[in-house]
Image (cartoon, rainbow, N blue to C red; front, side):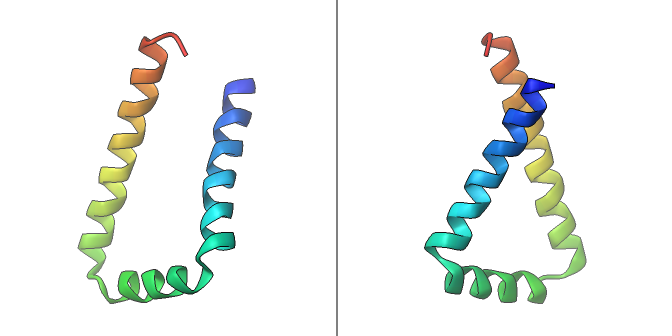
Length: 64
């Protein structure tokens, strides 16, 4: 349970930094994402998912 809370906390820190440090840039990024085809957005999401799983596996295998 503590690992899940740590992961959620880290995600919120990173996302909070984006909103706090570059809110106008975030709006531009959202406009770019809206213009992408659905297939491209899905591929980006699946790639991010795969990289995330790989990082979690790597962290667990290194003993973190």
